[in-house]
Image 1 (cartoon, rainbow, N blue to C red):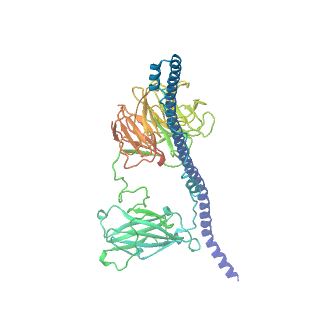
Image 2: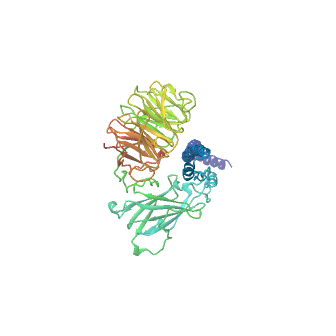
Image 3: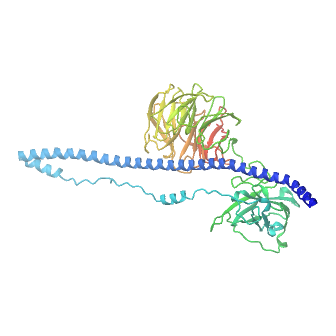
Length: 591
């Protein structure tokens, strides 16, 4: 009995290190869950902030349509009313003269009166008062809103998940091959797997193939079949030996990696399951995500198609650097909006959803970050525009607080202006004489503010007329002191004198050269050429000072998604807030 107890105690002691490892693993998972909860909470808030912003934009658009159409109808009716009033005055005069002719019994004059007068018909209004709202997509929107987003969890353990199928051993050159993956929990039971982006397959040539003879990409598709089961379909371009990694959460599954042989077409004796070339697709609840694999590297996301075995982008564009990524940490962004550049080249960025301003060097290094969320003076609620003033201080437009805050370059609050006068300030610019140009997006007008902070004048109103705006966004000032405004919902750029008198406009809605789909950021180069961020078309266009189209900035290799603010660096490069990609980009610009 004693010997048996000693053996049991010894075995138990030997297991204690493993138990400690298990406890540590559980602690790490708990800590990871806590961190992911915070991250995903931020993601949910950010996503719904964007949805709310889209709905707000639509509300503004509908209000603009309402005001514009009412205004147009009223103008026609007012014109008809004035015309009818004039005719009525003429009729009354005619009646008076007729009474006089009848009283004088002047038969000749009476004949002329009968010939010239009393021929008017009852006037019909040129317009009606009918105006209504059509909410065709409202029910669909409500239904969609109830299904937006889903929280997905999985008990899948990569090391217990397995793959089967002939595609693990061999494939036929140019033909689709199939591997079936099953996901399992800690007990080995079949369990729902994670979302498709967490399941990757990477294939690399390991023998019998010269790397330079392969095409750039190997197509791999991961297909959800049913709960706990996935098909991995791939096509190899050349015979030889390959190694395959199947990973869940970036961890190898059971028995991985796998080695397989690709045979020439005539050696194939088995027909593999065929999939349509139209993949990826979605049908009958089957979700498909297309993946590509590169030798010696990690699988690429659907948004980063890259050259085979190369870390460089194959498309030659004008990109110099990318600053930041999505997040709320230092150097990260959640919906960057306005940008400005100091005389020494420092880049200032308004991070709208993180309620702060971040400052970077010309090389993209974070120098400082300042701003506190709130509705008190010196705090930021929704910073959207930014400008460097003549004295070097920084002006920031706060859309939700409805004022302009002025800070020292270090971020120390100095003053605010515009309270009770602004409805939703966005873009800022500084004139050659130091006045601050404030674009009031919500009020569809522009304010000119004196250097000391007093509102000096304003111009513009809501509408689609020459000197009117529909949700203006940003401003710039050229060497002639003319003010350039991007008119978001009217899809054009408008140019005014320094006093706010309309000069001309250019652009219309469309995708062609010189056309816009909701223009946002504007900037002016040393030759007074006008650069415009075309938000809906995700591009930057260049025009001369008279509005004639010149060219595009080449962003094809690192595409924009919903660009907002624009600024030029002292050496002539372009800085743009790429709001949809949650970063700031710098491109070369040849003047």
